[in-house]
Length: 89
Image (cartoon, rainbow, N blue to C red):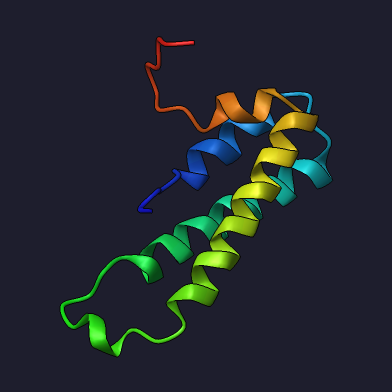
């Protein structure tokens, strides 16, 4: 589930686009939260000590759903997370 977004690069790209400020902020918050949860969900050396993983996975999934909803409302959002030099559709 490791997924990391360059939030600062996305913020810079959003500044150049015609996306409402509240939507841009919500999208940045979702990406930041997904980054944090990805770190928390990464396996540790001793997996027996990992409590609350199921709850965290559900929360991660809800944030992914929120991300998909925002990207459906503003399709340009799915483009701003692509790495620099992205050439695929």
